[in-house]
Image (tube, rainbow, N blue to C red):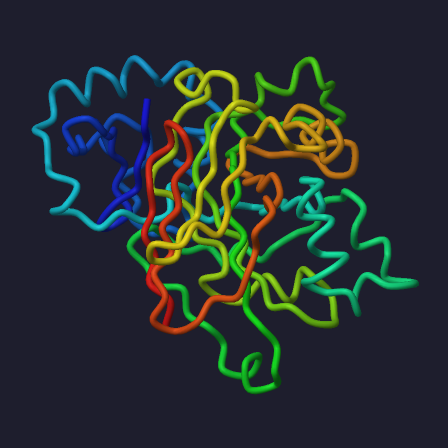
Length: 291
């Protein structure tokens, strides 16, 4: 099932083949509340999806289709409690960070930046597939580049603490495309990655059962006709099950939390006027304008 949030924070089931969305908002208890900051219904949907699935399917069959071109798709989650991002999870990206992207950051005492770990991004950095990536004026003025990082991302369904690797898959509601837009330079990575619009997510959430094995997905990012990033998630140094186990050993994972699984190689600068085209196998496509 493909779940979308659209227009005035309504919930839809997407038929990607026919490019339609079916409004199923009334099938979720409490979803009549349109305030995204009080979106407890979204958290309940993430937690209780197995018991709500049939109700959503029935509502989708009954609802008239609306063309995706006639609605505004928003980020397919509401007010996530945490955005957990991964650093240094593809070997080739670690190499480019060491040799090209940020040698002054990763030399000497900063070498730990090349080790796998998790960090937090501000939930207010989330934007949707219909939104622009807005570059802060201060960073380019100071000579600091803004880079794209296309990433497989996921939403937690059933939360937990100290989740075993063998049980991790059961805690994933679904997967989506994400970009971890990054200001290069000195300073804490959570701050440099938390500007507004620096976490585009979408175009919809594809439930885990439909995705199958998440370690066999192709990721590609283009700017115009130029391929900047192309990788398969099989190349992750730390697979998704281990990411979930590790993150949950540090902090309790809760329904609706977002995890971004790390940047593939090929990161590079973005500029006003660029158009970022990102695809991941089975998860759709996003085209984002940079302003």
